[in-house]
Amino acid sequence: MPRTGTGHLERLPSGSYRVIVYSGIDPLTGRQLRHRQTAKTEQQARIVLGRLLEQAVSGQRPGSDVTVAEVFDRYMSVAELEPSTRETYEGYIRRTILPALGSMELRKVRGPVLDTFYARLHRCGDLTCTGRRFTEHSRFPVLNVKVGSRQPAWQQVAETIRDAISTGRLELGEQLPSVRQLSVRHGVSVATLQDALGALASEGLIEIRQGRRSVICGDPNEAASSRRVRPNDADHDCARAGCEQHRCRPMSPATIRQIHSILSGAFAAAVRWEWIDRNPAGSAKLPKARHRAPTSPTPAAVAAIIGKARDLDQDLLALYLWLAAVTGARRGELCGLQWADIDLDAGVVHIAFSYLVRAGYKMRKDTKTHQDRHLAVDPVTVAVLRDRFQQVQDLLGSVGLKLAPTAYVFGNDLPGTTPWNPDWVTHKVAEIAKAAGVSLNIKALRHYTASQLLAGGIDLRNTAARLGHGGGGATTLRHYADPVSEVDRRAAAYLAQLTASTGSSGTAPQT
Ligand SMILES: [Zn+2]
Ligand SMILES: [Zn+2]
Image (cartoon, rainbow, N blue to C red; front, top):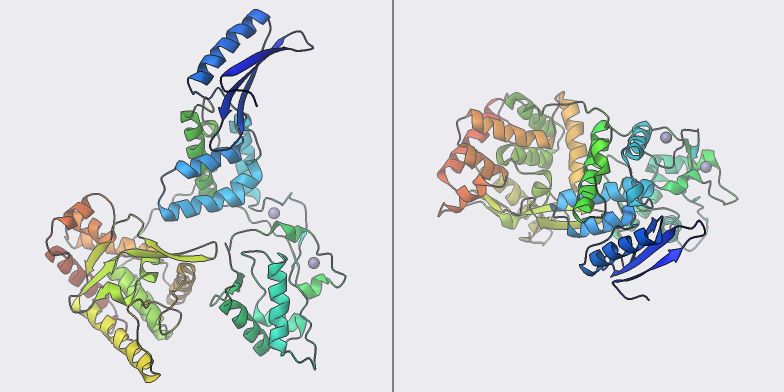
């Protein structure tokens, strides 16, 4: 291996000269840094050689043939991003950016390349799609239940699916057909299928999602590219497997703009590292985004959705919506809330963690802005929380169990060992909003809190603190000896009163 800071000239068949300089190993990519440049005459070549050697010795990278994938490797290892932002970035990089541009040399990426890429995504977000018709083959195995086997039917079904997962036939993030579809196609009873899927879920191989199709544990957006290829088993029957004609799903302008900003950030870093001279994203054409101003829901809309949740016997979800409206907590923050975080006697909710599901891994992380905060809650909310607490304790007590302090308030099971998946909550809230005839999501509830507090004359800095925004809010909170300020307490009472008073018979969720 050549020494760092050495170089030589080569005479090319054309008569011109090639200068080659080694400047060591890139500690990040592990590749040898070698720079080549051609010059017409020997004298020019010697000048170039001198300049490049000087740069190599002074540690400057003299240009490079790094690929876009290598740029992202390095960029993501040094970029300072909030956990949820990093998660979003990594998803787009893995699913969209790397498959399309990863192997491309960074220096060859120009505005027009990006224009074509964005136009392509605008037509269809599936990178394997060429615009021609094709069938998306289901890789789901045939479920043959042997009658008279000593193994129960549900175990046979579970084993077939388990094998398909372990061999990679069914990929991470792939959705399973619904139990009804499976039952019809494979002639297996719904009960058998439910037992089999339940077993697989308890092994952590699949995730059963209420109201949605079950998914092989993993990132739900991971497109299984192999679906273009027909599985080569003799008994693959498209009708029976439920294979469908591919339908193009255009990527939204907002998503394309997000991908663009990720590319632009990484390229800007590459410019700073002197890997390229200018940022190619600067001249790319972007699809126009339709701007939708964030509208803050009215108290009536908030009351309507909470009331609807109660009408539908979704009391726990009603409590979740109520807490979102009166605390302004983020979706994952409420999912991550444990009983130990709530001080019912003091009327304080401590928001310190956020629950997120990433590539099938579930974790409880610091809050988005790494500020934990103590929120005052009003007496009505305290009473509702206390009722729920008591109810869960009583039910558990009746079967000889005790509620653990680490139990999740919003859990899939009564002991609260696993919290709700934030995506499931979004889905459920959308369903209930639709049923209630209001347009509202969890993010809008945060807007509600902010705008109502401001309209009610509650101090802005306190509002920021309540919502967990960085800057002034946190500083304000730190100045109070008591973790919960008097202003915050007034804010809590005001919000609860506002949310409850617009409902016909009071909106506080009953548990
Ligand atoms: Zn097929
Ligand atoms: Zn398509």
